[in-house]
Image: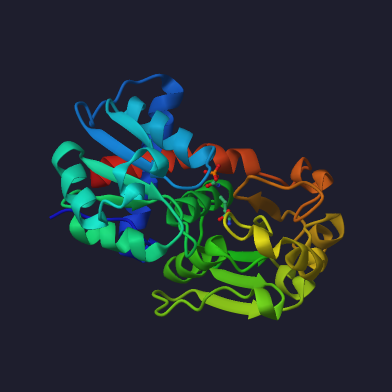
Length: 298
Ligand code: CP
Ligand code: NVA
């Protein structure tokens, strides 16, 4: 039976740890130049209704490196955005492709696509969540700290799609997540948190980073939310990741950002380029973890 990845808890804890083992192996093979082509002859259609640098390129390169082929499909070029139904599109795409990656606005569209497709559907970000990002982030934490159970992550900033997936991921993987944001920027409540991790939402960023192993942030204005820009900038100003906030966490705390970063807004250049930052290793790991996801699902 086909499997989709629409949200982190489409996988259980054991499966995620298995995915991470595969990611380590794929990363090593790539570093040593060992060819590994399990997806020879397979094709991934990648539908993008929003901009992307990391997700698009890492999935496209990932498919190529696994021996397969990726098609970059913008919504504008498909009949889908000219009125062809999602149901018909899902059935047609299922006849040509071996998997679909989709980045779009409404999460319900991704659910409907998965329900009507007979091939795996992977969520490459919706307004609600961003599962492939947070899987790669947790892998990066395991790689840097040697483990994930009990690790404290302080997510400071807008309670957006990334924060939502962090709540699911931290809970499932037994981590401690403190989300710090203004009341009006809180993330959507997750209907069912699986696992034995701890998730709390606070208002004070300094409270969140206390004893934190990881300080994490994301953009204040997500794609599609530009109309709220001025209001959000004012509200989120006290939630900037700067040196003062980093100094309030554990001494060796690591700083993460899913990128793209808006320097001097949600994070200062001093911190982003500073010794605590692991943002580019984090970005690289998108490739290795997504290759593991592709090999598993396709
Ligand atoms: N972090 C992330 O998903 O980046 P892109 O928007 O560039 O894909
Ligand atoms: N929250 C951001 C993440 C970008 C990778 C957005 O949705 O635009």
